[in-house]
Image (tube, helix red, strand yellow):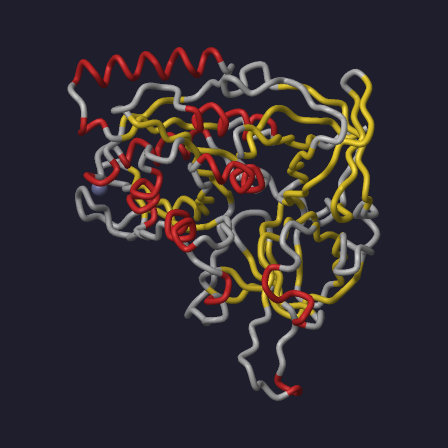
Length: 406
Ligand code: ZN
């Protein structure tokens, strides 16, 4: 997965920004990393590396251009030349894959990534029973965040017999029906590149790019933030603080003023956009889709070490004021992972996923399905927004339901 810090490199020619974010979700062993590799040519297993090193987990992005072969009519990615017949492919669009960790200890990271997805590929392994615990949790998570366009990759079909594959297929169909999810199922063997053309075709058919509306006010989720200056840089040459993330609505231009909520001290702040880039190079303006980086006039000490992670970025005057308390109307998941009690108690700690921000909170008041949560730090949110709620169960944060902001 690419990291914003390499985005300062300048590519030749016109930079193309990805027009859609597609999440890769599913159980940890379903083969998501090899599927990302088959689709994008990039192999970076960020999450297991980060887990081993015990460091914070960040959402990864990997981009790929999709092409259609005019001769053999098959879809492919990565290179312009058709891998099946050698003809020059017709460019369809650039897609950004958002990698969600499948490990159960990283459920809250996955939830914060769900806010960035316009559609998802649910990866299910043909050699395991369906559903696995994270298959359920991940499908619940994207349904809470409003993602409707889903394609299922029934992966690892090369590891099972035809009978086992058919039996697993039936399990998947039953699972999708139970969870009210309409999705095309494509059997794949990612590392052998089997049916990747059909998977891309299904993505092109079922996961549309969001419509860009320049009249809508900017709404962007900040996923990372940096100080890109090397130690010892002269003050006159210092670059401003960099914010990395995804635009969900509206657009952003160089020279424009933006508002960040909350700012470093809890209040909203306004700054100016000095530069914009994506993984391939500089952009004059950016739209929804993919990971973009914005250099701002902010002091880089404010943005260093992901300090602005999870923050909302918007047109000045359009973002909600930060608040330290939130009132929610709670709905428990009908089919949460087994054995997690569907209840929230007074003084219980919860993790709320507010857009792409995870925030620890404590329940300070509750009556019926209405609760008031005191947040550890101020956060910005809208009335009516869906907030995923996780509670501690067997030493792990597990998704139990969601609340609508009252
Ligand atoms: Zn071809």
